[in-house]
Amino acid sequence: MAPDFDDLLAEAGTVSVDGWDFSWLAGRATEERPSWGYQRLLGGRLAAASAALDIQTGGGEVLAGAGPLPPAMVATESWPPNVARATRLLHPLGAIVVADPDEPPLPFADGAFDLVTSRHPATVWWEEIARVLRPGGTYFAQHVGPASVFELVEYFLGPQPQARRKRHPDDESAAARAAGLEVVDLRLERLRMEFHDVGAVVYFLRKVIWTVPGFTVEGHRERLRELHEQILAEGPFVAHSSRFLIEARRAGRVTGT
Image 1: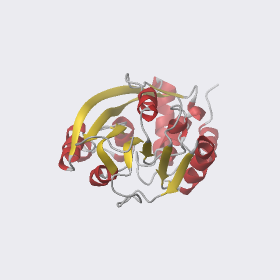
Image 2: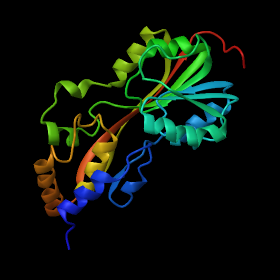
Image 3: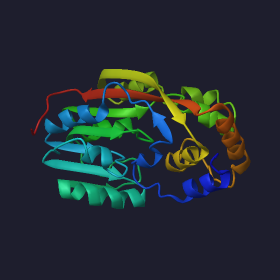
């Protein structure tokens, strides 16, 4: 028996989307992971750091799972539910969570950290990253790349040719260099995603709010119904996420370690 459209929307439209845990999608959607393994690499860099900053930490899940934290560990987050979630998760591990609006300036002194990290930041303020890094310090992050999940974006918003260039790693690395950082690693991958029911799409769009700005279930109900019928007739809706790994270093020798 096919799942009921209204039931799928009701369930996915009310479930909590706090934090950055996508386990609710188990069995309903899949996404390939980048080959480099960001969390594992992050753990190695945290182990070698004395003072680190994780920007836009979300609910703190990625940082908490990366392994032992350095002696001085700070994370920033702007969304109040995630600030509370990250605080509960990271404080017992020795990290301080700072509520920050994700706008410059970062609330830290010049040269405060030898490592700055971020996973999927919505915005990247390269001059601020360079400012808070010590000489020889490193920015290590996984960013959302260009035209990520654009099959879903354009399904709801129509063609977006101008937006396809946004978040391009060449542009990001140029901005990093302009801020005085040396890019030492840059890797890009496109990864298959499958949404097996319309509820998975609703949950994803409610959680990753920048995918379809202004998305609401009621406002997009008819398009969602068409998508529901398409999935029933043709199988999973296929999209492709875009991810790039970037590592950039401030010139000079690391001090204070």
